Length: 399
Image (cartoon, rainbow, N blue to C red):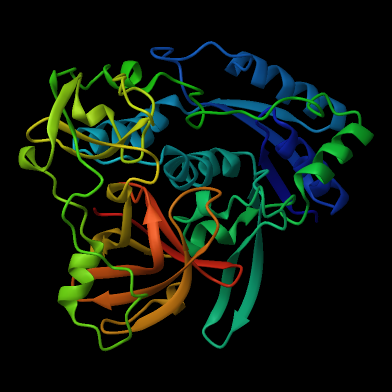
């Protein structure tokens, strides 16, 4: 009997080709389109609306000759993703809704609906790969980067569990984007030339302050400019060895603590919680040779700290910290023991080239110390660590 796969057919080219690939592999394939958002507050006008997505999704299913279904998961999406977003921004952290969407919706709420259709597996069009590994301790599922280095999306799946990977399929992970487009054109799929979606997963491109003001109030506060020569501890000597004391790890992973005395007031903002480290747009203060960038925020005092130029030293740090309760192991069998040190590659944002680093497991969590200074380490985002092409774990950046 054929195994049944329910694919999340989004109306984009990646999932369209993934559905066809599954059919070639002999699976019984059905398509499920999900609507996850209704509110248009803060949404920027674009050529991609959910109604269009649904239409293209249904057209592809008809072209391929597979059943098409629709489900509204907007309540779960609001509770599990959007409410989390608001909560994190209120704390002065910058969440990654796409990572949460995969963990909480596509491979959770969506999977529940897929099982109602008799699914043995859930598939998506992500550019990543899954490998089944038989070990003395049992079956292990490896999450591998996509073949196309420019489109690798393993980072977005860094919070998936072994249970979720057990029923997940990524049929297009071995292809490049160009190959996917070419296949779609050869098959005359309606999505062959359709643009990729952008913005927040299932919401779209938004004007973030307007979107956040649904729940977070605007509050006038001071904008302070920090000079490039501000006093700080330098960590330029390369990452430490196993004998390094905890004091070094703590200081190297601490964000800079600016204050009024660090700089001068240059203007006002509408709420420090609307800004994130490394942000350039939205500061709206002119008169500088180079753009101003956000160096940090003080949520309790409602202060926005800025610096001139994208190479401002306040944008760069040597390390980060992940608390114990925010560490996630995709490979539980590879979990680090307390006191252990491990060399690996780390990514702190999508499409960032992998960075050499050392992980130090301590009583309170994991310290990640990079070989070179990193720009824009941002609390609330995810750090994902890799062993070669395999993503083995991740964690929320604490500060």
